[in-house]
Length: 156
Image 1 (cartoon, one colour):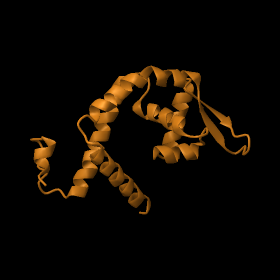
Image 2 (cartoon, rainbow, N blue to C red):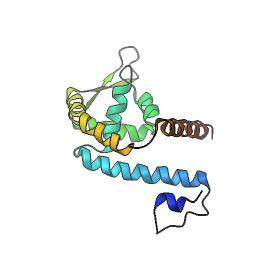
Image 3 (spheres, rainbow, N blue to C red):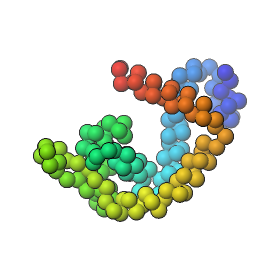
Image 4 (cartoon, rainbow, N blue to C red):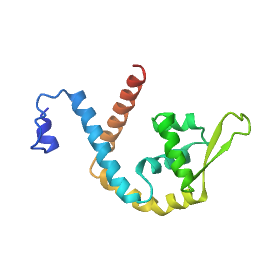
């Protein structure tokens, strides 16, 4: 496949790049671009901080640092730094687990819930625009591919 036609870049010649390398580069470039756009959109919070709030909210119960790190796909150290910033801004609280005092559970505050609610409609529009024109079948294949890549990565 000729990636030069798909990617629309005159700066780089993609003709000799194997598909797996092209895909990894494309995912990294998209992640950087999305993060910059989301950082600008959310203003006071970085995309990584917003992503942490979203991940905490998706958990069935208040997660521990270890659990949240797994959900976010990031190291304990990185997630801890994100949480400390969110705690300082009043978006999360960390409380000792009632059953196991060695663990801390992470809770969203009312401020975090209000923030999410106030950005939800515009976020839906932005995500809709990003995925406009992409058929569900293509999304399903992409999701399956990335999940398979993630499983393979974990086995390394």
